[in-house]
Every structure is written in structure tokens, then in C-alpha cells.
Length: 304
Image (cartoon, rainbow, N blue to C red; front, side, top):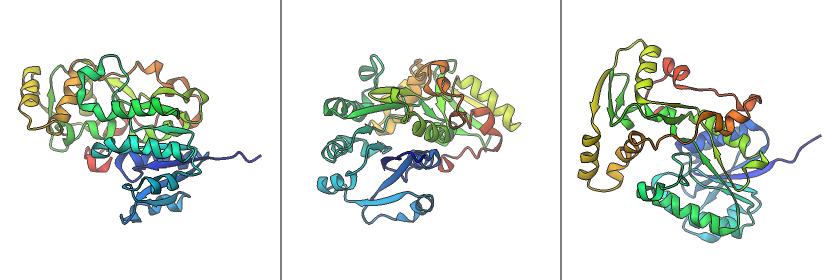
């Protein structure tokens, strides 16, 4: 018997995270997927998704009316926007509410922005806190998807690793475990988790693995057969770099590394993760860990 598919709209679907979320939704088979696309932008990079059944809704993000009309008929809205657009999310929530959307999934997919003390410790995530507050006040259903760091970008030049060149830099306390999850698994697990009634008005933790930088160096060396030349910067060096940065965004990656060094990079233990509690289903098996990905990885963020 045919089951009704859930209608879901993705904001930021052509981005690094967004394309993996869209792929996960399409492969899951229980969703009708619409990707919002800025009017006038190049839609050719979404062509592969259209072939797989996604619809494209061109939208003028400056027009609330346009946003509302693009979101009409959607049950779920998933925001996967990054950086600058994070500040726009309260607008999307308002539009979703006006359009009759049932659930809004904000662009979390990182450190736990609901963790105790995190607002004081990490004010740079202010846009995420403002979105969380707006969503909780909206009356819409919500799901916060917390993933830790992305496997495919964490061990690249973005975070001062040059594995192809055999040189890596680590900063602060490299014995602290932190959460790393593959973008491929995040896409699949997010699609599966949103079908779980327990995801309603809840935080869903997705954990690929919890590891330390010291573990990661050993794993990458074993997987690639390379001996990495490791530069170690102290906690004091890290603090000095943060203090010297001209603005918040310039120090953002160092702030993330400081969070890891301070023991704030671990979201939950793996056995507490949603994917660990639902791993019996074929959609929920883990596809990538550092050890399985590293032997063939390019270690270039552009390939994420």
C-alpha cells in the first residue's frame, strides 16, 4: 500500500551540507523534496537532484511574501545555510509559520547550541542562539540536529591540516575527545530521524565517532602509510591568535579548536546518539568513519 510522502523544503540545498541533506532525503524514499533556490542563481548545480525527483522553487529571499508562497504546502522546512545567512533564519521561521509549515529544522549540524553554559562560553554562535529562541517562541514543531564536526572538513587545510603535503598543525590540548560525523551519514540519518516520532520538539544527536587529535593523527598515518610532520601549538598560542584576530570571523576556526581543547567538542557519548539507538535499520548503518574514509580521501575541503 502506498504511503503518503512527507513534503520537505530545503533552504541552502546547493551548499556543502545542504547537498548531503538533499541526497539523504531523496535516497530515503519517504519525502517529496523541494529545494529553494535564490532567483537568478545558477540552477545547473541542482540538475542532478531534479533528475532524482527534487523540485526547485526559485525565491527572492528579500521578499517575505515570496518566501511564504514558496513554503506553502510544505510540512517540514530544513535550513542548512551557513555563515552570513545564519542571521536570516528568524525570517525563514516567520515565513514557515505563515505558510502553515508544521516543523522547522534550523541549521544546527555542529556543536550543541543548547548545551549548558555554551552561550557564555561561545558568544560567536549568537546567530544560532537567536534562531533557537525564535523557533521555541514560534509554536512550530522543531528538531535540533547536533552532529559535532564534519569528518570531510575537519582534517583539511580549513583546520590547518595538509595531509597530502604530510604536514599537520594541532592546537591546544590534543587529548580531548571531540565528535566527528560524516556529511554522508548526516544526510541519511537526518532524513531517517525526522520520520521518528521522538524527533518532534527534540534534540537529535548524530555521532560518527568521538576521537582525540592524537587518535586522528595515528589513524590517518595508519590509513595513508604517511608519517605526518606534526606542529603543536600550545593553548597559550591559541589564545594569543584569538586575541590578535581583527574580528570574530577571522578567529572563528581557532574558537572552534579552543572549544575542542577545552573539552567542549564532544556532544554526547556514541551510545547515546540517535544513530546508535536505531542502527539495526539499513538506512542507519554508518557509511564513513575516519579509518574507512582516510585511505581514499583527498583531504581537501572542496571535495566535501
